[in-house]
Amino acid sequence: MTSFDPHRTAAGVRPRSLADAVERQATAPVRRIGEDDPRRGVADLLGLLPSVSAFQAWFAQISVPVGLTASAGDSAWFTFGSIRIPQDMPPSALVGLDVELLPTDNAGAGDGVAASPLAWGDARGRAAALVVSRDLPGPFQTWSFRPANLPMVETTGLLGQRSSARYFYVSRFPTGKLNDTAANKMRAAERWAPHVYRLPSGSRLDFALAVRASAVTGGVGVRQLCGDVLVTAYLATTHHASNL
Image (cartoon, rainbow, N blue to C red; front, side):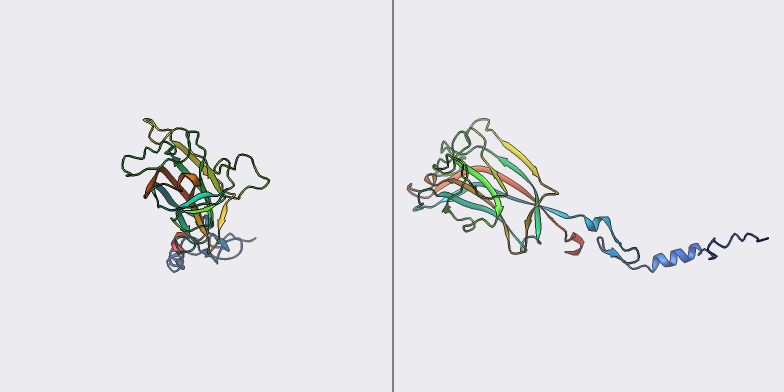
């Protein structure tokens, strides 16, 4: 008859003592979060999740110089914010936006600070748009002119086209006027994950205002385009923060 030995396992191997286990734990290699464990052949959960950063772009006043000119059918563009890849962020993906907008200053009343405010947009929230997209043409924080292919921004944009421009995000402005006593604030929150807008190395995420060219051309002296725009962009990257 076979006798039972409590110090042996079914496989015939004596279990290690608590001191053995403590020693093995103390000598185990130290790994940073997100690094694979070769002993297990799996990755930590945190290493599989993206790291998300929030960037903000905004404007309250934009200077409009004298002498701006535009061709027929062009809109006036002003890129007021830009995130450069990889200077400002590793190759990433845009996964969401938070947007806060007040109406356009279509009365030209200004914000109480601007010396020479100009009128732009209209009380219905048309004739101007907020655009967020990758690698928008035109210089940073300088007025430029080109077609926008957006509804009713250009005076010729009264009928939809067969193929409109491809932008990540477009928003009209809320109805009313910037100087209304209780201005109509619009808030929007967009989340796209798992569907994302990719931002590879060498690209930019640009935030721009597109308005009818007639709002900023002509005029005498330097004027100010007044508004209230705040955009928060959420960018995700698989480069974990502990490895950056």
